[in-house]
Amino acid sequence: MLKQKRTLLIPLAAVVASGAALFIWFSETKPVAVAVGTAAYGKVQRSVANTRAGTIKACRRAGISPSIGGQIASMPVKEGDAVKSGQLLMELWNRDQLAQLELANSEAEAAAANANQTCIRADVARRESNRLTQLKRKNLTSDEAVDKADGEARAQQAACNAATATRKVSEAKIHLVQSELEKTRLTAPFAGIVAQVNGEIGEFVTPSPVGIPTPPAVDLIDTSCLYVSAPIDEVDAPQIRVGMAASIALDAMAKTLFAGQVRRIAPYVLALEKQARTVDVEVDFLCPQECAGMLPGYSADIEVILEEKPNTLRIPTEAILEGNKVLLLAPDNRLQRREISSGLSNWAWTEVTAGLAEGDRVVLSFDRDGVVAGAYAVADAPNGK
Image 1 (cartoon, rainbow, N blue to C red):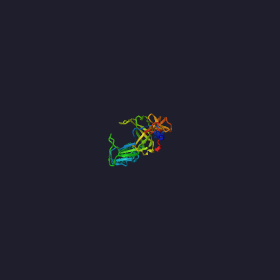
Image 2 (image 1 turned 60 degrees about the vertical axis):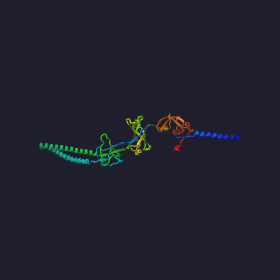
Image 3 (image 1 turned 90 degrees about the vertical axis):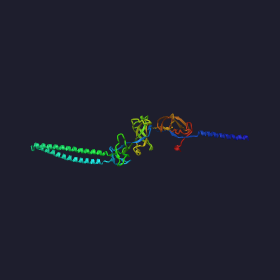
Image 4 (image 1 turned 135 degrees about the horizontal axis):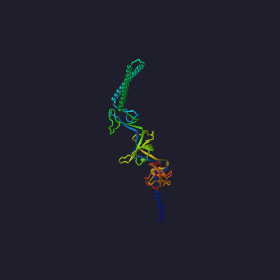
């Protein structure tokens, strides 16, 4: 009987030992799910970006106010209106100037009529003097009559000249009154959009005192030309040149990346308290159609392209570990640590010059447990499936 029990226990122990061994083996070889990126050919750029958010600005923006004080009599535009160059934006009370202009026009008409009359008399006097001169040559008139006619002609001509000068003075007076009248009318210096209006009909406006800025009567923006102004760290600024290509990203249009070009680099460094020293760089938009919905004042980021390779082997930059190493998901589903040589790099892509081949898969998810060299791993399904 004892011999039979021993015979039964031996197979049972073997089964238990085999199960334990299988459990340990499966536990040790349970694959780790990892996110991977694939080495492939594509574009890689070396670039620099702004240190703080930039701002979209209009190429032309003017805060304009009347050059004289007065009461607002008319304001034919409102905020958001599109206006043409020269269009009236605001008019102050100016009935006194209008009356002076009417008076000046009347005086000019009277001066012109008087000059015309005087010059006609001068012309008649000159013809009479010439006629008597001809008669004197034939001894048909006296010297006295000729001298008298000549003196009268010269006197009338002088009166004509004086009347003509008076007419010019009257015309100049008209221009003077018109210039004074123009000071009461605020017109658009260029076509644009009225961004802000400060004032209502009946209110008084006054020019800004010297050294004390006040809000403009009308803030006018030309939205047909926009650019981004953004601060670049002083260390990166010397690498940038006017004309370099750039990309522009907007918080308001997060899904779109806009093409741009460096238009200006500030010739000085800004040293703001508790902030890094920066240089303002301006970038033009190269998108006449896509930029239609943009507004001055939007926050924007720029990335200036310093160097570019259009078709080179690349991997995601986040796959690179310290020491220029990567974890490669080998064909046997084991993770291998491999050293690579890199070239151009930015926050998204890094060029691989040696160490990897097209199609190699590198690990991106280093924060997961068990992601170490030698571990058995499987790649996450695309789109999380």
